[in-house]
View (cartoon, helix red, strand yellow):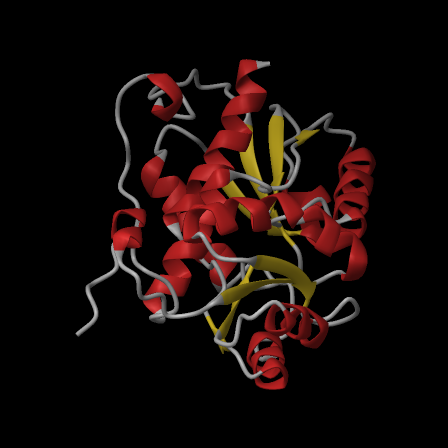
Length: 255
């Protein structure tokens, strides 16, 4: 029987786990604008809801990238947080163009990754599917559900390069080889699977480094079928994603 998998809980207190945003803000504090590629519904709306619940002192607006200019406030500063896991140049160019067209002077943050919280969330998503041990304490066990992990992204070679640091962080958590690969182009998942199996890893799993709106819903399942691998669900509205959004906003307040 598998043990229940718990998501991370808030870590109150000081040090590196201090709150990313002050508990109170002035009325004219910048608006947090979440810019989602594609639709501002579904998983993007779920993430916005979590951010609002965790940070009631922030005014949070959610918009699709192509309607960003209309969503920026005219009378207040705004911090635009792209809802992507890597600095996709196409998405960021669209966001910057919209900000410039609005004349609002809004600040645009970097993408949400790479970051250790992404690796933590990826680990949990794998564990939810029985493809990884639920926590690092259990690494004392000799049994591992898989022998190697493919960190899946979309956006081709540039995306694969951008998520390499997250692959290293995830490999450290799992104590398993992790190779980044593109789910929708080259260098693709079949090549990554071939490399892992050549190194002796037979049981493979795909960990999608995706929030969920960046690619067709079946892209992970198709790639897993091609590679003969199991797969986790995309990151979705994991609490770590909401915290990374708050951290991006909070870092702009600090500057």
